[in-house]
Image 1 (tube, rainbow, N blue to C red):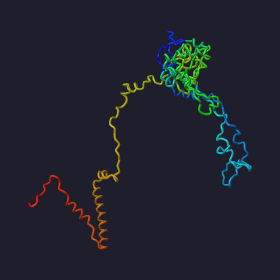
Image 2 (cartoon, helix red, strand yellow):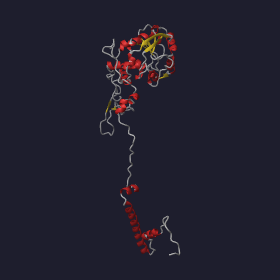
Image 3 (cartoon, rainbow, N blue to C red):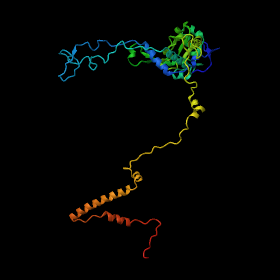
Image 4 (spheres, rainbow, N blue to C red):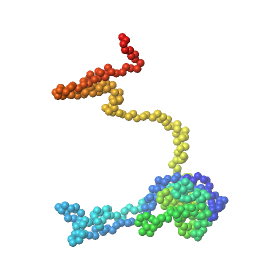
Length: 390
């Protein structure tokens, strides 16, 4: 929100007049993009015109189903013969030359009723956003060269009748960079719209908000991207085109002064809108980082958990020998016994076959195991007996 208490007024040549205007309270209203987007979506639907396909479309042929028993689909088929068309499917949305699925009707619910209180809330949010340079620049407007945001000019601008005067004002105020952006953005529209009298697209420039039209509309209407609107009839479609807050606005002095009477303050109701006060801020202090670091909140929350518990990976003891031995130390003995029994069984089978065929008997695995135990090397540090001495 704009927080400066006073705003300078500039002449039509962008020179300071020396007079200042108090910033209206509406510029300190809460900016709610969610409400603005919702209201913009619904208000924009109210300019739509009904459309529908012809009631007869797809049914202007004589067709009847062949029924069952012919091993073909029961879709209606064109009567007659002697032409490719006869026997072809008709009427259905899956057929060539058929009607569309769920044909559109003109009695659709085209328009939307919009809550007046919500509409006013959205307008105040849009006005407040126009006074925040960061939001205006985020919208894409080129405002690096203008002296102040919001930009207020004297009431002589309302008496402009020539486009030359309007161009001079925009150039000297530093707002012409935004018009240059509009000129460079002109492009051919994609799609069917180019055949429907909306052939080209372009970005939007500044919005001129005036109190009385003494020729100002005629002066600015031929500059691409520039819109004009009276302060008494502010419109969300102009203040937040596309549902995005932060349009670059140029105010005349009398229009700027009238905002307090139009929208009131938090204590004084509006003089022109019945039972309306500015919406209250949801947070009295919007600095969230400062709030979280405050002593009141820090004393109420628990201490951070420094120790992190690591998840233990569960391993399968049937596949992992080390885990099985940890659970059952005797498992190693059982395993070795099973291996030896398997070897003895193989030895006995091979011995029987050798005896039957008259071949030498295979080596006994138990004898081989006893020999390997005797041939084990002595441990380090043990005394080795010398030869020839008893």
